[in-house]
Length: 577
Image 1 (cartoon, rainbow, N blue to C red):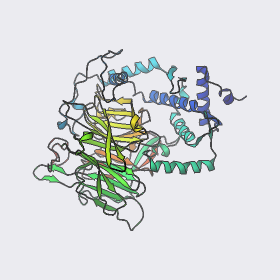
Image 2 (cartoon, rainbow, N blue to C red):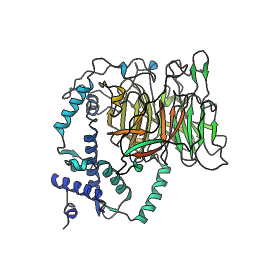
Image 3 (cartoon, rainbow, N blue to C red):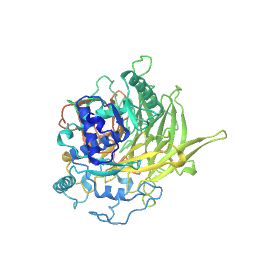
């Protein structure tokens, strides 16, 4: 009996679990076929890879805030209660609340933090001690099916090939077919079957909120680092010609093969407001009969700040909100040449209490729309809002589910794929939040915090932060179809790549200076549109590629915005009441 068949028995012993995982690793690395793959095998291999990446990055040790958030089981409940129990190695003192939200701007930075924070050397020494103590020891975990699984110890030579294992495992999972007769056994399909499965998968992606981007498909064993290369084939977008003043949101619709960008007016001292509220469409296809550029304007589109595809090829959703108390979500008809806008929900519907400044917009796994709003800080913390249209024969109404984002101050960007949600908080703590949200059953919406990365207590220079999980000024984010995440650092002019559990992998290399990013989006072809609110050139195009090493960071020459004093302050965009 060969080694693989010996490992197909029940996981009664942790040593068997360990050997089974190592056997799968070996076959993947040697390009040998894996004849049978159980569901628990997939789970254990993923857990082992996660541990490898955590070990390699050496940047993902839990912070005190992480521990507190995990301890506080009601962190994302509609009525969160803060834990008062002191945890080992932590104190029960609260983090100082940020200053008045209206005064926060993209100019906030790490320089405003307390002088009493720990030094980089102290943090590095603490991380080293944690990894030495925990090392590669076996860690017992409880699986969702109430069976016991084990985290096997990983030899160093396997850790070096973590990226290749991760990519090959995802390929195996995509080709896996689960039979009805043996629900726990997964058989690998043939090449002809995989083509049919790929077509079905593409159709599923079109109809769901699952991202159509795939960040790591460009990587290989010899070129295992993600890179963005300047894309020259796209026509340059003259910001002055197209009157782009303050673009905050971007998305891509596959069926129309077009980018859609939101644009807001901004206040310039001495000149008043410049620019106009509109959506700019950029056609990326080859049909010469279709205009490359088009402005979409409607009286209902005022101060658009975020955008997402609501129905592929049919509708895009736009969040319209400034710092007044009149936000709305509008739907733009893509099939009609006039692109008429309709209302999905607005401040006028008192039942949903949508009457505070809002930021960020995405589509959930249940097909609903998700955003974040900010009541006055003295009244309540920011909130995560999920809106659903209830259709019946008599009328159309909107219902909502609301979850308080306890501990946040300025949540501004949100990305989704499946039940995965990533939120970036631009407050002084510079926080990234990973949660699971399942609203496929509206009467039983489930939400769970997975991980929080916060810069609280971190006192590093911009140069040292480049290759860590932290940010100087976090901006937009995107999730790919495998759950990997790219997040922009606006002030430090770079992108970071994270694996699905938000473990830091590496900084994304570029062959161009990254602008002061507000938002970005990667489409199914790996093309990336990057928006900047500070640079003269507001729109930049790139393409995902790969490199054999982490390339040096290219510093940006972006300076301060001309004439804009505080574009996110209470004075901003009060055009009319």
